[in-house]
Image (cartoon, rainbow, N blue to C red):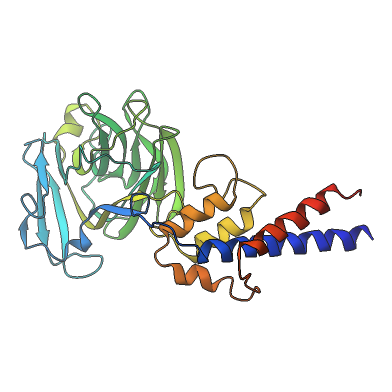
Length: 336
């Protein structure tokens, strides 16, 4: 009897949830793009760029002036026909980026920076570290401050990152093979003031923002500099190739943080409904119909989400939803 009642309650919960979805999908409301996952910077695999200097193309600028270079070439690419070759010169400290300061990013909680990189072996280490080749990220509340950095030591293949508070470069404990393409990503979390690093879609580590709390994102830079402060490290050169560079402002409804809001995110919301905060899009600590409204608004198209509930009898009016709510409420009051 208890099992039978439990099944009945769960059936009603399922129908309630489905009725809620059908109603929300059928209801007209203003759809905006403010909260959707948006590309802050998308180099498009550098396919639309001309061979030669990266600086000056599509808004990209350079900083540092230490003698390094970033050049579009077509011989070493991860995909397509273009990639950027970055050369670190001795005593150089250079960066290349498309600045986006003053545009109000992030819109939500997360910024995702992702790129593919192929590092050329420089030779045996001749100091504390070899050249750092990778990406570092910045905020600018008053002067530039570092959020996080992820890259590779061109002498050892060690994957490096920048430590919280001290700003020192350290090893993550992971390595890459020279002359091969690998995927890198940094997820910047502006609520917890930390960044999480990934290598080939695998978690590396999470640590706090280098220079403390931040609410503003200004730029993600392709970087080439000495990872160590000793003279030998400062004088070593290095080379790496970059492709498929993107910076995304992540929607809170993009639960799997893959750059879009789709059926996979709907499934996360569906399983989390009234159970956990895994489908929470409005940061109120639970998963409910309000979260679905944002999920629906940020979805790439309403049709795919609507198709997920077509097998459930569709209520003709709001009264069906109210009826389901009333039935569920009465069941909750039943004695066990």
